[in-house]
Length: 325
Image (tube, rainbow, N blue to C red; front, side, top):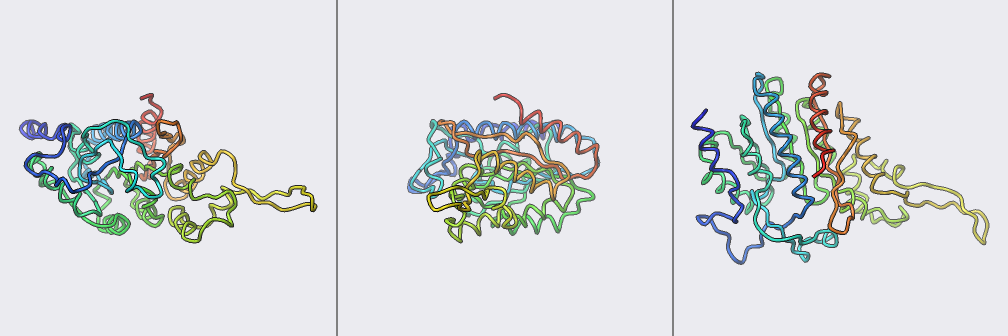
């Protein structure tokens, strides 16, 4: 164990100065670019929880698993290419430059190791880069690694079905770009009753931008996206209110988007999560861009039905979510 810890130090801050010289990216390849202060806050919270989680379960008989459903290449460059971000270009911002560890590499730095690390990534290029990084810099952990290229909405339900959850406990990090996590995936996660999940939910950068002032003006394909992420079409009742207004032509029934839409989205998503998870954090963290516009909410749900396990997990998560950074 002592030698293993010493070898593990080779993983620390690997990408601080960029990708490995041994496995450089082609100049023509687009970098995995995203981030800003909100990214730092999100990853700091995740790292704090992983450290507390592995410490709390250190002497428990369960096999401990870390799952990163959108693992990326293992690094991130804090600079954005607006022309590649599509619907989200207006919200994403460049906030400095440089290479920093992504969630996958940060998870490997936790002093108390997980027994298994599952990295899911849809883009083959990013998965190959992550494989090379781990192989070159964390060779002692190679036996614990499970790289699964593909769509998280297909891989996660399959992983949930095939794992023996009587002997396993896990922490899952859901950090999609956009509205990529379908509700059926969340249901599969909840059914395990063994996974604690941290969720980056695109309340402002995604959902709110699809909610027109009048629901009749929302394109069908946008409605389908909202149905998939919330699990049904009931979101219309949460985000739109119908009332009667006096006009020059008499009384008219008008349907409008509710005020405080971001908080309404956060509340509704928490309510939806509470229908499938035993406990959900009541204090989600709002993540803002430099103009103080809310982009995401970062929240937590615990799957374990045990009141004792829920109490400990929620105590840690609430503290982390409420911590000033």
